[in-house]
Length: 474
Image 1: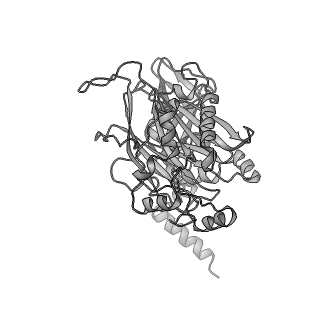
Image 2: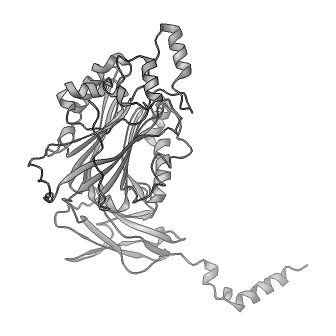
Image 3: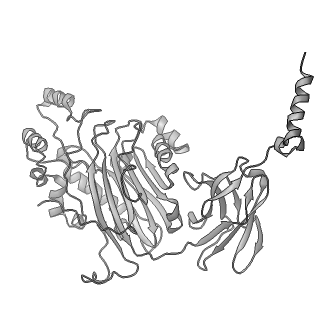
């Protein structure tokens, strides 16, 4: 049985575009660039969200402890690439070698709520985090979406252990709240990572000949994950695009050749050769609808969510590890359950550095405000919600309150003297996320003391300079 063919991608520009990356980086440092990996030069509308799942991030004790206190090199790298393009890191979770990052465009931040993360160790009987799963879930325009990045046990003979570990991860990861407590309760679940499933029965020569001839379909029947989906009921609701790219493991470093050195060593020691395999995968599962799907020609119900896969591919140009990265590009057709931000805010009047300024904001009736809420001032290319230039506690700095809006002041001493283009963001303590963001606006730079001095204006400035120069002639 072949994996499912790609559904036809829609042409509407209103769809939410999601680009998902899985990559076993083999403890390597980030590459010089990821332009093609993230489709940054592709034609058409930009992505709305990036989800990046890495495995085997450097997890030596010194590195791991350092990364707990500071952002790890991979997070810093992707923030440096994506923040100038208007993407903000909305979630990250690290468990030893597993890392999951989620970035979204500014405009979507007020509609990304209820962000929670979980992890499950499965290495060394659950005591070690070199294997297992990390998950981040969120409400996207009112729909619950979960992303699960896994690294499952290696080796051909461990197919059953991989399935057992995945079932264990699904059972163990529970989220706060009664509405969506488990991973399988979400409207959409994306499951991806180094799942380590191998190709059974066929010999190395047949596999290599099939790969060299691009006859990948000959290998699909013996792919352990495809075989398991026929037998295991809990896997049958997961969908995957066709594997129309080379097996992504195991390559020589900085090469598109399959593990020539390793094959020789294995043959020397035990007479066996490691076979290429599609270890790196991206699947998704839509929760069965409570009501029947609309008939052909009928409009979908308000509040519906559907997923289609636009592209499923590997990226052979990246060689920092023995795995090639795999990406899935999705269209999410969303009928929003939440269409208005909980908080709307804007700067009052023109802002100039060196002067106190005022922010006006209003909230929806259902918004759970808190004394610990704050408003931050951000550069347009900010990296994450805590990457503010300055902030003010909403209640402590309030200067007026009305039925329609409230006002908060920001002190002149902290405004950036150089001015520039900025945004305002409202961070909710109760919801632990940004619930409102303003349009970009300008802050006029502060005039230097020299510019304020009338002696430095026009002719007077020239005369003063000439006088000063004559005093210095010897």
